[in-house]
Length: 547
DNA sequence: GTCGGAAGGA
DNA sequence: TCCTTCCGAC
Image 1 (cartoon, chains in turn orange, purple, cyan):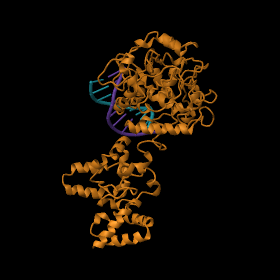
Image 2 (cartoon, rainbow, N blue to C red; image 1 turned 90 degrees about the vertical axis):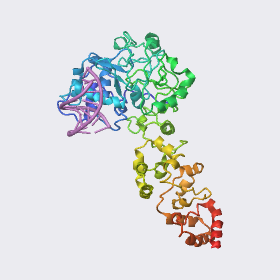
Image 3 (cartoon, chains in turn blue, orange, green; image 1 turned 45 degrees about the vertical axis):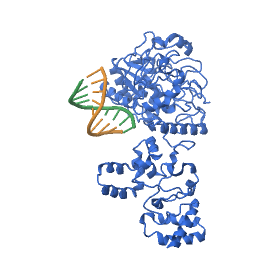
């Protein structure tokens, strides 16, 4: 699997080194110093991709939460900011003014104060990078679900089992890691005096097992899982099934809650598939192992997907790409991306769930091949404007006018469709579409590989390119949207003619010239729906002969 | 102390 | 996009 980052190849992002790395990137002004250099290697190694957040891909600016992590990992700033003992990811700003000052120095904002800094921190709430620990002054909590996943996918214990002293409190074996609530902060969460990181540091012999025994996290109160909003139901949907065999929510001693999601139980200790990361600022990754029975998802969207791969989370951006820190397995990446995409669609997740990899994935077995979406814009996304207007329009005539307006706007559809969730798009495009977009996209063209049904309106559909015809025959008409309903009938006819025996072509033309005129909506091409529609030709001939 | 809207900068 | 700044509300 993935090789471990070597310190030589990772950036040593101590506060001072940040001055030379991030600082350079930030075009530091003269006199704008960086956090004081802690002499003596109290620092920790952050690979460069740790400075690339999913929310700001490509950003080279140090972000506040990175900075907070930096401070947290520094022993010398422990009097300023420190991990809250006993709470995974929770930290307390002991000296808000000093933290603000340091942040201001880093950002060359001498006017920085805690009020402003806290405002920036509050912006992380919505991003779920942080949340506030209510009732505790200056206490915040990292959402490592958000942070670890995209940025520290291989975070784990160090090779020798030593947990970095700057590591946040970690859940123990007996204390399950529960994703913190998004908004409903856990009022029950309490720090553990003399927790697993006494004095904020651990001795070199503090193996995870030792931690497990030491922490005795069984008395840790469970937290409400996070991801309540957009993905909660999906998370429940995807997670419950997986978790159900493991005993359900009660397994972790969690309090029953009518609305709460099942507890997310994270594997906490080295198992096959979990690898140490000497560069992790965290002690243990909540990442589940790959393919294990207890491969409990950390993310709803990853619930059914392997989560540990031997690739950098930012392969294209990683400074280690090709330089041996992480091996990159294209196949695994492909599979991973595909799985993510499928998860997004299957669980109606926001694509932001996988912010690092936009859903541009090679199609494998995803139910809704994404690559088809741009090809079938109209089919997959009934025009929102049309629907809205249809709801407003009471007159059928107005609606009819609207249809006329909407249909040619095929180019506009993808734009509007972007605003919708892909899952919704898929749902609409997989059966209910006829009901929803029926009037507008009535009578999707019968696929050319199917026998031509008696669909008078299908004639205007454009035949898909050859490669599309062969692509997913099994998806039949459901996946084959009506192509541009208003045009290209002639072009289609030409293509059809090319496929047609000359004799039939002549017959058809002769017949079409006679029949295409009365029914305008037919456009004359509806009789021919592809190779399988040859049976329609005799019929047409018969009709012509009748006349 | 905390929250979040608003405007604006880089 | 990520803050920074300001500010009113709680």
